[in-house]
Image (spheres, rainbow, N blue to C red):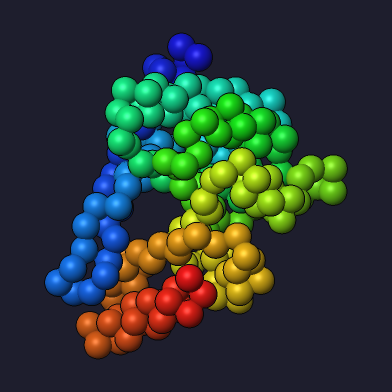
Length: 195
């Protein structure tokens, strides 16, 4: 646990709920992992942390403790927790989220756009993990739609689990403003159609 405290910290980034161009507000805070050395997301270290059931469990034990502390100190805090699709293959992920389930009404689980690195038939399936999360009272969000595995076709296949989708313009900032607005509008219509 001390090793994790020496290597990492968490950042709470506001998530803006977009109604229209004039109407938006802070909906919750996305919890972001940062390296104490670089102050950025630790890509290679994180890949190592989720490379096995045991390492994932060690990391999530630290992570869940930090989330429990924040949720206990701030009773009105609503958080969005990122999970790499690789983590849905491990029993420890659901076991540790069950430990947090007293706060499930105030937590949204974000499934990120990254592709799983390893596949195994002995681990949990994505659908099983989503069903378990739902039974624990969590809402599920899909992060950075239109990038990575979080395509529109993937979302349509998993529509029953979706509480929210998140669109980041960072990936599309090179589009001209008219095209970008149309792209945002199409995702807003998608969200309205399936909300």
